[in-house]
Every structure is written in structure tokens, then in C-alpha cells.
Amino acid sequence: MKLGRFNHIGVVTPSIPDSIVHWRDVMGATKIHDPFDLPAQGVKVCFVDTPADGPNNGTQIELIEPLGEDSPIHGFLAKNPLGGQHHVCFEVPDIHAAKAEFEAMGKRVLGEPRIGAHGTLIFFVHPKDMGGMLTEIMETPKDH
Ligand code: CO
Image 1 (cartoon, protein in one colour):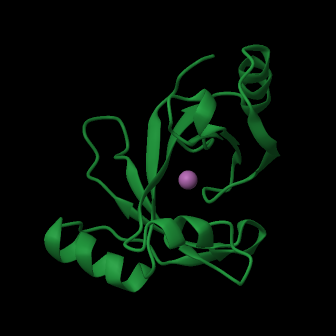
Image 2 (spheres, protein in one colour):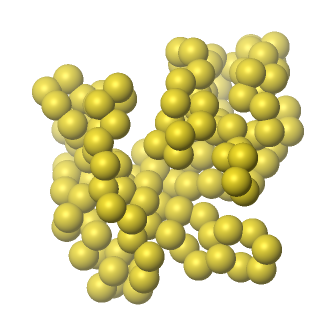
Image 3 (cartoon, protein in one colour):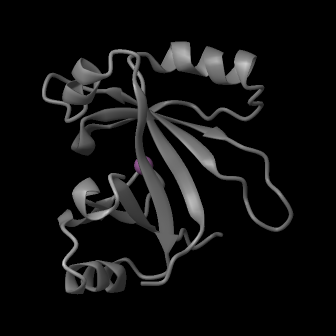
């Protein structure tokens, strides 16, 4: 497995607009992207940038709100009404190689690689195989 850049932390929220106020006014975020729907994943998403440091792009907070009745994150909000930390995301150079490597190590990859919020292929690895962290693996965007 070739560990790449830490891309983002996924944070579930009952309200992206309320979370935007928090990240802007409490945490001082100055670059907050427009929210958008990801209907295939049943979520609405909004990225908040942290500042870039040297040649690396800053990492991001991915705010996630349920979209539709059968959104997979309704259960998370039922257990955590305030929302909270949901997943971490690391980049890899080759998504298919990474999937094969995780599977060879006996890690449970959840579904086939699919297009994620950054427009590149992603998959998730089961938290019970990852020290309790739901882990998103994302192919590095070509423009990075
Ligand atoms: Co994510």
C-alpha cells in the first residue's frame, strides 16, 4: 500500500448552512466551496479548505448532509444528532492497485471504486479493519 496525501476528513452535519457558519465564524475558514449534491451516494457535500502550506495544497473538511429518504448517513445522525467525525480520506496514485492491496491484506473494501466528491475514483474500507476509522481511499486528482 502506498500512502498518499491526507486529503480530507468527512464530517456529518444535520445542516450544511449551519456548519458553514461554524467553520467561517468560529474556526476562521476563508475558503468555503459551494455545496453540491451527490445523488449516487445520497449526500449533499460542501468542502471547506484549510490553508496551503508550502507546495502542498491544504487539506479539507468535507461537510456531509443527508440527501433523500434512504441516505446512508441517516443512521449516523440518529446516533449522533449533532453530527461529527465520519471518515478520513487518503490519496493513492492508483485506486485499483490500492483496492487489490487492501483485499490481499484481508481488509474489507466496501463496493467497487466509484466517482467521489472530487471527481476521481474512491472506495471505502470497513472501520473494523482500520482501527475503528471508516477510511476513504481516493485516487489523486491529475491536476495536483
Ligand atoms: Co470523503
